[in-house]
Amino acid sequence: MKKHSKPTILVVNDDGITATGIKALLEVMQEIGTVTVVAPDGPQSGMGHAITIGKPLRFSKVDLYEGVEMYKCSGTPVDCVKLAVNKVFKGKKPDLCVSGINHGLNNSINVIYSGTMSAAVEGAIEKIPSIGFSLDDFDSDADFSHCKKFIKQIALQVLEKGLPEATLLNVNFPKGDQIKGIKICRQANAKWAEDFDERKDPYNRPYYWLTGVFENYDKGEDTDVWALNHGYASVVPVQFDLTAHHVIPILNSWDLGNGEPEIERISGPDGTNLG
Amino acid sequence: MKKHSKPTILVVNDDGITATGIKALLEVMQEIGTVTVVAPDGPQSGMGHAITIGKPLRFSKVDLYEGVEMYKCSGTPVDCVKLAVNKVFKGKKPDLCVSGINHGLNNSINVIYSGTMSAAVEGAIEKIPSIGFSLDDFDSDADFSHCKKFIKQIALQVLEKGLPEATLLNVNFPKGDQIKGIKICRQANAKWAEDFDERKDPYNRPYYWLTGVFENYDKGEDTDVWALNHGYASVVPVQFDLTAHHVIPILNSWDLGNGEPEIERISGPDGTNLG
View 1 (cartoon, rainbow over the protein chains, first blue to last red):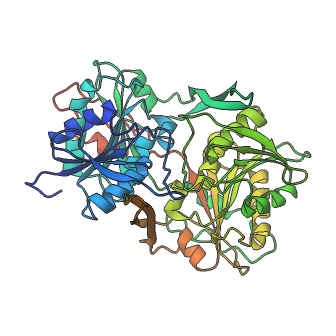
View 2: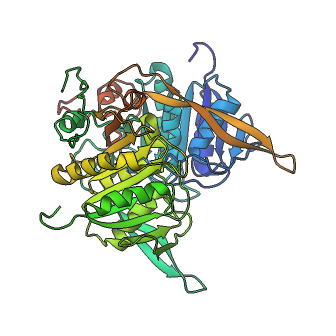
View 3: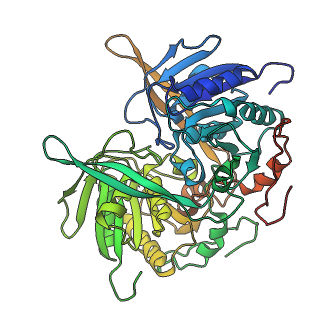
């Protein structure tokens, strides 16, 4: 971010360009900088890090809110970030990328299914300081007002201090206006226990709706689930290098050669030769 | 895996149930255990960790190859794994989940966009030992025969030794039958430099195809990109906890309070109180 000039801010989401959550987010960002919105033309929840490669994309300017340059896109949240970088900012990256505010939590493992968080991850891959915001309220008319002061302060801190390389922030807010404060957390070890609701169509053929319950296996008091359950907003630093570095030495002790050409050992993450 | 009984193996992919790659993979798995296939009814490349929540799924049995129980699904690769666990294995988890063989590499950052790898990640989230396999060949009639001996040995080792908690393997093969051996690697720091190919439809309205070139910024000789470029198959251990643990102490030094309720510091990953 250049000093003494207004920062440029890209706003994206996965609930679609007309969602209440993105309006709340862009209103906060207008207090900080020059805002550009690129968002899906309809709901894209649960799209994870999907990109559109088998069909073309539609992409066009829209005029919804005063003082904000806005574009809608027929693709996924990640497509939106790619189009923003390439077609709107044309390589001159924005100073900040914010995604949300999502209607519904993206804590613990949900970060991996979330279009909101995947858009923020894509921003970080593009080396833009990026933050995803989510509220524990699925309602389309959810009240986001109590999140705004926290969002502003977190965004200002990211603009001032930057984020370590290849990381971003995942911020989740509890419902209601009594947020006790912010906790820096790790992602809880929790997952969905899925079920599928089987129904019959008018032609008597079965179809299935994904349902399920969220199960937290993590007793830690340093997790996002714990923080949210106790009335705090959670901030989890997120990375997109998925290498399980601690497993490299274990795999180097395996027999993967099978009498075939010798496996060559390579250096471990600490620089030692593991061979 | 129970000793002295044939292991049960779930085979998934993202190129669809009729792809050449999944046929090659299930043939190898038939040499090892009892195979069940649950795969998308059409191409689902680039779907990342998307799940289908806004519309219902179709799911039905098909009969393509002898001795293999097979199902096709209208959803994403991750949907396939969820349906397999819930509707086919009914909670009695398979001993192994293998995904692929993908037509095209899923090295470096591609793991995050890949339906193949996301299906394997979902298997690991379900606590099933899981492996994704990919070949550097996009052709629909790609030759996978040179990968088979390596796939068999890697699968046998995973069945024998298991994988550390919350991890899986990402295996990529170079094209051609001269594989020098296997290298255990980390994910390279590389990304797509995107472009969008703008065209006009018959009504003169623009549409866009995602294109781009793959750029590797990583000079390391311990990466998957390096191994593949030098004729080796790469094996990268992958994790799905996205917490950037090393960033937690940094964020705890930030001013996120803004005169609002005091931020409470919590313990770092090493157990020290950072407050």
